Image: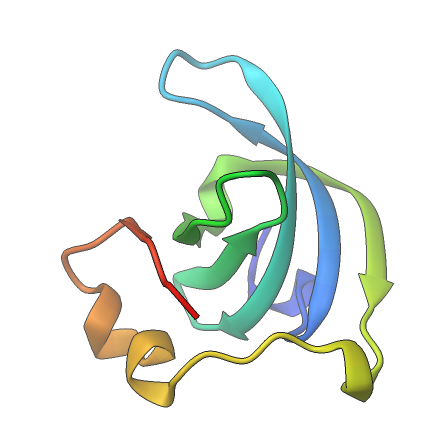
Length: 94
């Protein structure tokens, strides 16, 4: 997968490879799309904001664009590409 396969402000159900090489489902809300990775919120109970590399994604199972009134927002500094240089996961409290 690559950058052109994803759009910001969209909910995705993805098939991703975990650290052990198993394919696992992942439900995310994509905030930003960069050249090598995307910044997305886990739609599960944890609600973690994570950096997901395109090479981790096996396929897109479902994509749903989010209406402007239902979008999630985070501060621009959290979503900035420079903030994710040495991080893979972040917890954000509203």
